[in-house]
Length: 90
Image (cartoon, rainbow, N blue to C red; front, side, top):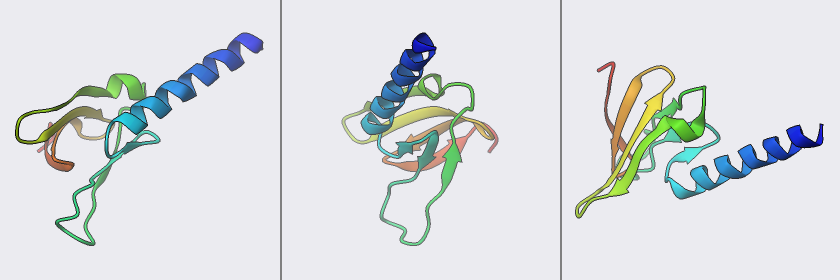
């Protein structure tokens, strides 16, 4: 029982670090963070198997932030500057 509690605590800590380090990712969901379109905000569930494995790439180029993640419903998703650009299902 103690071993399971430790593993659960490690999982929570890892998810918290991931969620805090990637803008828009929280509790297994990605939500757009762009304020250019008030009243409009899309959210997609990350792949249900593992939040840590769902984020394929997160980085910053000279011009924009880049996020590629695996969505539960739409496959791979490209996000630039916090806005969904395209999905595998588009």
